[in-house]
Image 1: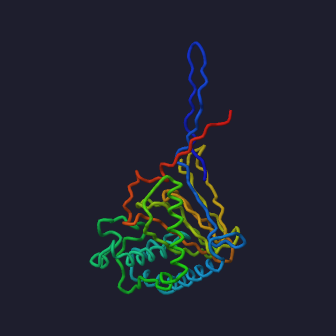
Image 2: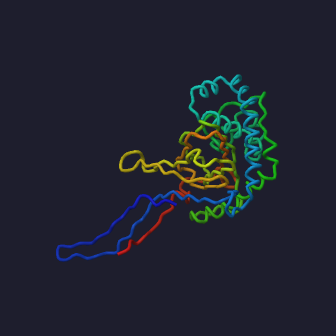
Image 3: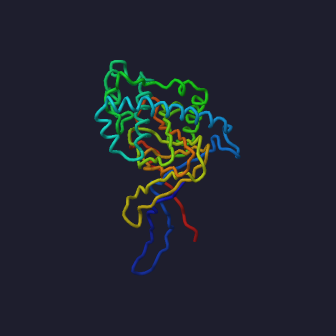
Length: 303
């Protein structure tokens, strides 16, 4: 956890004498980051390394299938998407993959999106019109494209991953001073970073409780997981914090914390499962109720 934004120094003076008052530092809007070894080799972890290997293989298989079959079809049939894709940076393949996975998730959550809305833009329709909204999410579904991934969704490893996320969510929210019950709706998507692949800065403000990243396959020092300074870019701020990650590690952090992934400099492909945890009934949380945004630390300095 990083402590930021020191604020408040009280000293009382008068014309006749100086009165020493207790000094209290309030650290406002710190970024609460929690990391656990979910399947990290060589340490006491929640799962064996084979758990992460199985999930990495599932992600790689689905990614290759998407890149070789689905993506060419989307580029051919969706002119607006193709124009944006061809003008994008090294994040474009993973962003396109996430776009497709959003649709897969929406079709699997038909209690939020009724059948009548699934024939149109499920990410715009309905009373939760901003749920899962984001870049490239608002185009119409293509009849020629299959929006399902049963190999992942039905795997025991993925179901166990979702279970771990749900249990860790309770602890993370409790430590953040929030309480949203014991059940959540979790959107988990896979990202694959081949050599040179990166992910541009992003943050989410769509009513989620918090976000996280799990790295089932990662070569040491292949890339960096960086957070941008929420205080802005002007000096003396504008800092970048590199959050240490290892293979098998899972990190959880506020959904509004802007972060990015630097290019993978190694030949071994890195695999990440990113996730957003929502309230059980969808993206119903108002930003004013976000405990991670109201997190504050008080400290009395040593005399």
